[in-house]
Image 1 (cartoon, rainbow, N blue to C red):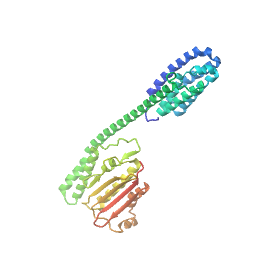
Image 2 (cartoon, one colour):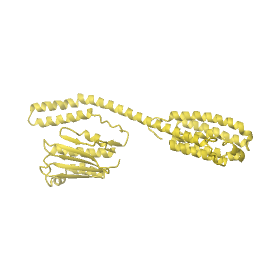
Image 3 (cartoon, one colour):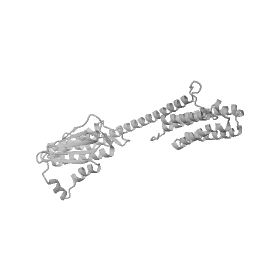
Image 4 (tube, rainbow, N blue to C red):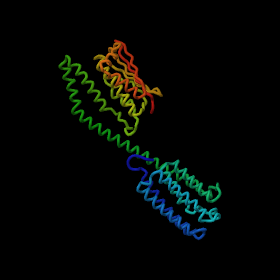
Length: 377
């Protein structure tokens, strides 16, 4: 039940130690009351000292936190079971048959509570069964009359209730952390938005406006500046802040949507396309390389169209443009001249992800990339 930051189950562990203190008081009263009836009262007091020593050590370990780990909880379960089993040594068979186990089942419930806090409802209920089974083994029979002996009901109920409370505390803590991270991300975006608006976006706006006024060759520069301003403004004002930034997955739609502009149209599914963050980042980068090629080589008026498909066992992104296309042999010629942009940035990326990249192009017919990666959510 590990979680980042402060342990959200700390209040439950503290309450459990209060129960431990009360159960030790009850066990002491029981010991005083029945000691004269035991077969070996001296040994019983010695074992009771062990019980109190272990209870004190466990309380300190759980309160300070270093005992909140599986090894310590399993050790507590073992100590409880052994002390319960010692009833056969310190008491007669008839006494064990007629009474609860010597350390009292109330004190033994501490192990059930600790296991529920550490392992959840399942671990708590299994420990409750172990406590009940030990109690029945010491008595020498199984009592099916729950009206006279409700030990198993109590143990299972305690294990279930405490375990569910611990799980709920962890989930609430995680949700609070995500909300805090989202709030921090929003504040950071607002800060960046102010800085960018005061600097980069104003420069882009000025370049776009003055470039159109000057005309001629600067019109293309003005057009590009205007597109970049609109893309940047769209990114800053979008609400696609990933709420799972602390996880290893991301919605691929969020990454691709930031590449949408006047010359790039996106067709995305209506439902999230969740991928491993590292894979999604590489696939998005390959899409960005393909779009850069459209902007640089497809022609000044070329438009690009991006289609994202979740095919179940694979994720496919198609990038099609209506530009001039690529002449036959041109890619091989570029590779021979040492320009490896396509083979490294697109094909190489997809191969490293275990996927593939296919290019279809004809002169005057534009180009189309189909990028596919295995779907390993």
